[in-house]
Image (cartoon, rainbow, N blue to C red):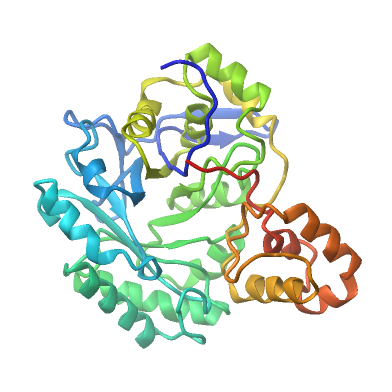
Amino acid sequence: MCTHVHARAHLHVLILAVKTSTDNSLQISAPSQTHVTTASKIPTRRLPGGVELPMLYMGYGNFTQWLLTPGVGPKPGIKTAWTYNDQAALMPAVRAAGLAREDVFLESMIPCGGIGGGVEPMNASMAQWYIDDDLKQLGTDYVDLMLIHHRCATPAETRDVWTALEASLAAGKARAIGVSNFLASDLAQLQPYVKSPISVNEAHFGVGIMDTETIAYCNAHNISLVSFSTLSAGVPMDNPTLSAVAGRHNVSNAAVMLRFVSAHGISILSSISSPEYTAEDIGIFDFELTSADMAELAALQTETRTCSDCYTTECQDCAKALNAAGCQAGNIPVAGRDNPNAVACLACAAEHNQTIMQTCHTAWMIPKACGQAGGFPHSR
């Protein structure tokens, strides 16, 4: 694979667990429950209850192509969400690949926080309705992993919705349960009330925008991490440091960005758009970053907050206030990332600060609502 820079979509991996020592250096060790099967190049990590979480799986694109790709088996992973409206396509894709339901790892998510069609306020009975409706749309009676897509509007609502996931786990509708877009503080609010373990937290990580607090919390509580939009990072893909590391390993800058996140023990979600990128994604398991590589990439940290709560009601209300002031936050719901007018939006927010703050409340919410929270835009 030659060294080059190109734009690509998001991914997640899980290979090495990373610990931060008191001098902020990175210490990397292999997780005890991570292994590679003989029929696959993609490692997995065992979740509570015995579910094997792929370190690389697919969140969007040509599912049949992904399932037929050599090296992704014997149990390739795919994901959806109640808000994605693509559930009806997944089982036909599985059958088209000559596989049965039990031959794939399947993840889905239910909404909370009033976004993506989710009602607000939420409660356990409504959460159970979303779970059952999602399974009905998928045409299956269980998923391997069910997540809460976003934290709810209040900690009490989040706790209530979590009980519905626990009930689904007990009923066999989900083999493992977890959350998505949760910060360490969100997890800490929920953790004292859980009866069944939070197996996974799916959030946004990338070079330059590693949420070390959330990583540390999840490692301490045996919560496996999954990353989306990994290539939407705190530095552009043509960053000289990325190019230098990529050159040493004869891989693309994108592969280095993915491998860096994977080296923190984080599983990666991919959006597959071509056989070339599919092969490259799987190829991140063919090379290892050295401790010197990791240190150089870690030095790119910008301290930019990722956008784990961009889809919450608070962030969307802030974006609406920005749009009302003419600040070009973008179409609602805003994604928190990749807004081409983000810089102008921030400047406009500063000009209308008193009015904007009446709705946005905190200064750190404005970059999220303006679409600059997730780093540099990418596409593939």
